[in-house]
Every structure is written in C-alpha cells, then in structure tokens.
Length: 107
Image 1 (cartoon, rainbow, N blue to C red):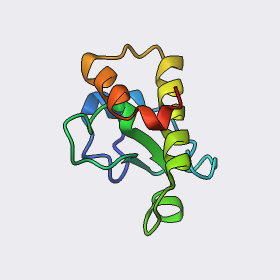
Image 2 (image 1 turned 90 degrees about the horizontal axis):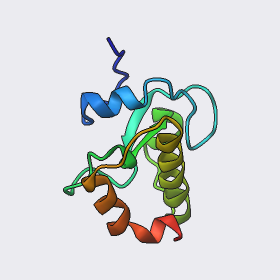
Image 3 (image 1 turned 45 degrees about the horizontal axis):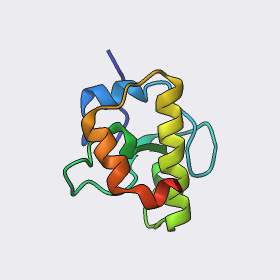
Image 4 (image 1 turned 45 degrees about the vertical axis):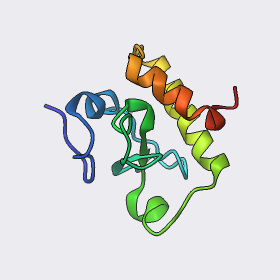
C-alpha cells in the first residue's frame, strides 16, 4: 500500500505510485517533499498526466507562490526525466501533453 501524502488526492493511484520514492522537492531541492502538485494546474484534459506532477514542499515552496515560465519548464523537464529514469512509458495522452506545452520543454 502506498502512503498518500497530503494533497495527492487529485492524482490517480497510478500517478501517486510513480512518485512514491520521490522525496526531493523540485523547487528547493530539500529531501522534505510533502505534497504532489500539478505543475500547470488541473483544469484541462491532460492535467492528470504524470508529466504534470511535481513533488513539492507544500507550505515552504508552493502555497502563496507562483512560478515563472522558466521555473515551470524546469519542473516539467525534471518530471519527464524522472519518469524516463524509472522506465515509465508515455501514453498518447502524455504525448499530447508534451505537444500542447512545447514552449516549456525548449525543444
């Protein structure tokens, strides 16, 4: 059974499982991540893609803060690299997410 950290309920069980060993906050780099957040929000069709998830220190690095396009791109690229490293296979929905958000990937 996977321990569901606070604020992860908006992601599928499959996505939460993918990030079960990701404890580093992708904003500050500290090994104290306590929430899995949507990088680009959660109000569009592909929002629940694992590519849109980032482990973050909720109170320290997320609440009350907004991210620049550069920071957003860095987190999206870090998520894609992390998923590649754990052997995740992109779905058609994931590929659409990358195409739709190409400006953040710098490709």
